[in-house]
Length: 65
Length: 65
DNA sequence: GCACAAAGTCAAGCTTACTTTACAAAAAGA
DNA sequence: TCTTTTTGTAAAGTAAGCTTGACTTTGTGC
Figure 1 (cartoon, each protein chain N blue to C red):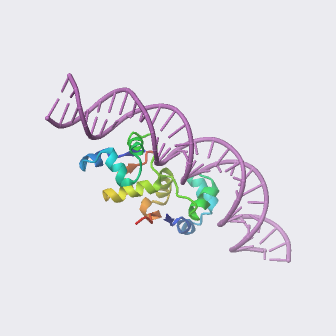
Figure 2: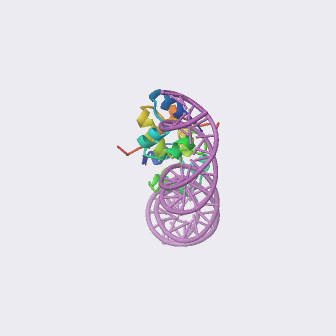
Figure 3: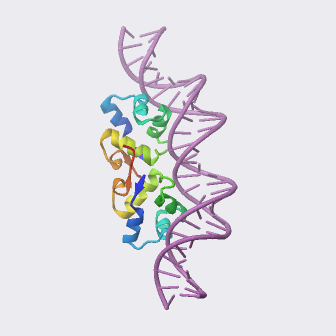
């Protein structure tokens, strides 16, 4: 699953640590998700969408087609 | 996390078993999600959204506000 | 070049998503 | 009522999401 977290972070000048704090997860979790090591849980995806004022689909892209 | 799976199923006359098959998970997983026992993974949420031609947000409702 | 911040990564452990098997309760049809 | 389908639930196991702590690598500014 691809995602635009890195770009969204850059737009707001957030570090991985800052984003982690805002989403209430560890910095390593943000790093792992950005790096595609695993997908976020649905609740975490919702939190990110809320934070960035976007739809989940606008942040995460399902590649299973 | 609330969800409209039961209603969407009803609209299409799907049993839990049928929906499970279409989403490639076990029947118990569908039952557990409908019953609120746990949240689906993000990939599974995407699959459901694709199946019903809806946005994830139109099926699953985050209650964390 | 050096110092510091940011990003990347690893291991061990815990929690949650999901599996299979199995059985009971409820609903629906004859 | 009896029979069958559907739903609910439980136990035990595996896999994925996430944690903390620690360390290395990369980037940036002076």
